[in-house]
Amino acid sequence: MAAVNPAPPAEPTVTPIIGKTYPHDADGNRLDDRIDLKIKQAENLMKMALTSDERQKAKTARGQTLSVELVFREQITQKQIAAFLALGGQNRLYL
Image (cartoon, rainbow, N blue to C red; front, side, top):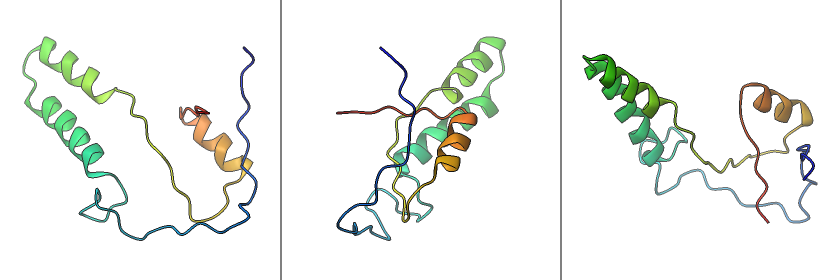
């Protein structure tokens, strides 16, 4: 299967209504609180690690890949997609 070259989608015919608050973002930092919790847990594991085994487990926890949905208020550009990919982001297309 050939690699898909991500490109910005076409402008929608109907402008979407995007909320300013979401139920899973109680602190308003625009991250789902469940992701915040995973980050804090991984950071705490690293702080509390005393042995090399514990440090390795903490590094593994910190290095986990998360699937997220990105919601944009305005059209994204090819340059933004390229920057995201250059930073190690991955784009998966679900049909």
